[in-house]
Length: 138
Image 1 (cartoon, rainbow, N blue to C red):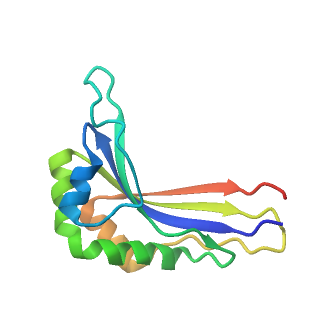
Image 2: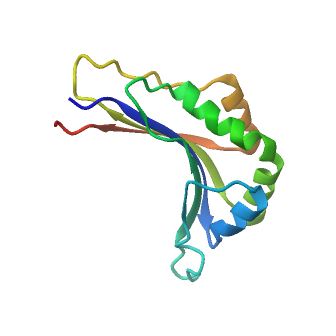
Image 3: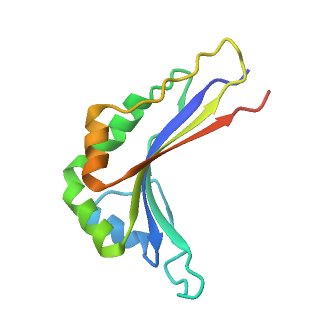
């Protein structure tokens, strides 16, 4: 059977911005970017995004630990994050993606956030997204 898997990420998304600009300002190399909205017209706006993610954790998925890894990377540039949110009208969020095992003997990971994470998210006006998926039988 497949094991539980999970990762945490921080994303900035919005219309009509180039994610490379965010990388330059923050000085942090993102895990992934989507520059679809960079040159989109005003008649059909498309969203761009800048994302910093943890590696995928397998078996013992600890959401508190995964989100803490992300926050520790972002805290030193909090003021710069606030600056790009305002200047590019971006929406910040922290996300958790969990792929849950169909094996009944596997424990379901706890989903929660520590005080440090909550404080940081509140300071920058971010929201939280948790995405649950069920693993395929193998």
